[in-house]
Image (cartoon, rainbow, N blue to C red; front, side):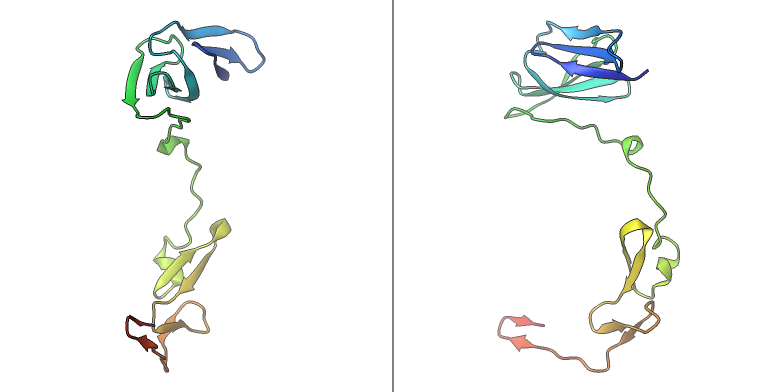
Length: 147
């Protein structure tokens, strides 16, 4: 079931996408005095509260088990739950197998592309995969640096 959770000045509500089945999840709790931001994950609803400078959690359906997870020195503006299951699926890593066929460095690019690169004092060969030693090297030396 797809729900929208809404924060009001002293309460958290849930409602279906079509506006039906409005429920007050939590209201009148001491730790819900000035909610600002909200996020959902699993069976919990997480929110920030400006009056108590806290990050809080409760059961997303019943509002039970309200817990202050963290108190902050200032008003917490936003909250996001970061978890591996909420991350986008990774695309194939072209550098993940045999270093992308690069002899030294494999650099990831956009849209699952890769390019090969070389460490200092080496250059990329014509095959664009193999690094070879530079025949000529120029060093610039100053009193406090070498380039």
